Image 1: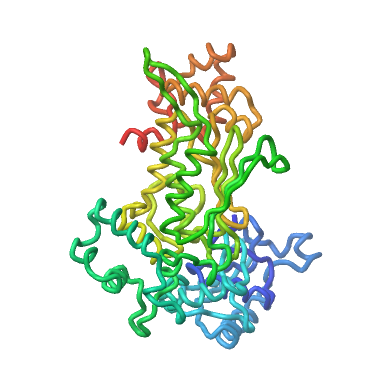
Image 2: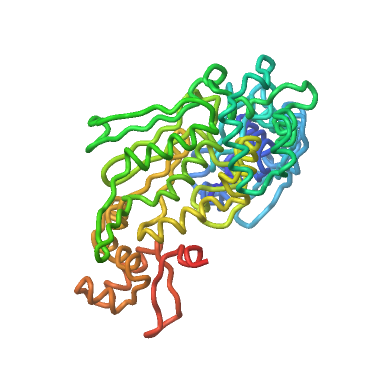
Length: 457
């Protein structure tokens, strides 16, 4: 199957140089000519191949073996390893493209791999790509018309207070001048001595003056997106948006279940607030601030959705976010400042904190989707989440049981659902997106959530 670093083509077309360009600009990859979409070599004697002129004859193979390397060199300015393979089923050409650390263009356009397809880069995305190829990031670019005295004293004070608690900034630096502090945080460009974009976003009282959409928008919806009950916008420096947004979520938007232990009143929030704070911080650190779109938080009675215009690095697929992964922040200068003041963790541990919080709350990790940006959806209960994703009431019951009880066995599934052993076995297999088996066979075999180890650590 085609993948991030593999592509199959039945015949050669010059347009496929786009794939070569995209491989070179991303992580490298291999392009095969003379293969079907499933990776099998095309038999040129097959009637279908003859009819549609698919596959590589000996003459084709010889011609392209000479042509393709020349095309790659002349139009892309790079060298690729082009090899002819002869098999009993037919010929195919293998084009191995290494990753290039300078930007490669094809006919003046820049392409990268996104999943198993090629993406052309335009506008702000292209600018960010070119900066990265130079070893820079968007948030590290200096801003010429902002001075240190223009920054918010309250935002700087919040940083100093939180950094004192975290112990991640030397006390002498925190008590020194703001200029010294910003230099220590790498928020001043050494070449120009100007503040970087990250500094303006983090500490300027009105970052929207320079970057449209640098704020947070929250809305509460009673039933659906057409039934907006109330909303808020949180403006100001990112350093101050964090606390204002979090306080609003807890005090105005999140409902609480009330219970009593003896005469003591207990209030449990519908959603784990620690996880919501982590999602807010991730959104602020990883947002694409060139998009012009604010961070959006949509709250419903049974779910809460965080959306920001940032994207994950190609090296971190969405499905691996809740596993151990390296920290690759979209805005490393912003992320560094948030780490130094103790707001976020390093080394990709933020999502593990989310897992711990939701599992303690008897809920599942949020669903994650790429919808023009990163969208996280928390559900108020596991049953609603599973049923919406699968449409199967029985799987929802099984997963909900495990969330509440900690584990489930095949016999327990039979008892809970009043069903047969074969049906229970089939349903447990279908629940593998959320559950894993412990034990090989027999009475000792149980099923637990995939995140149990993280939650217990």
